[in-house]
Length: 133
Image (cartoon, rainbow, N blue to C red):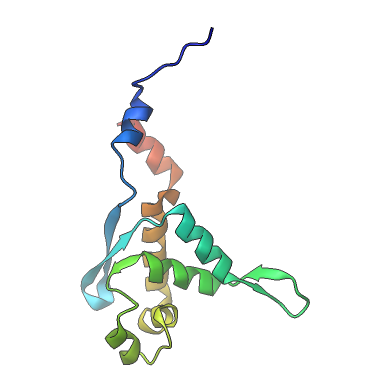
């Protein structure tokens, strides 16, 4: 007969965990911090679906620029790229276009990396080191 183990550290960690994880990233040009949040699996799936576009031959391909902007638009808590005044200020049509009009390419990369890190896609070596400590 198989024994069922209960009360393991992994189980305890999951029972006490939340998916509401945030961190800040500093943007030197703006002299301010942005707050980003972890994206859920469902949010990431919807973002990937939205960024997957059929080409003229009907083949589906991911638009990486759109994908990155969607990750930032949906993962950035402060500032909110969906803010109507911000969208209007940059002459954008929506939050996704606002990302590319408001941020420089390097800033997009920095904020994107923060969203991915907080969503669990961080540097594996760093995560292993953290787990050891």
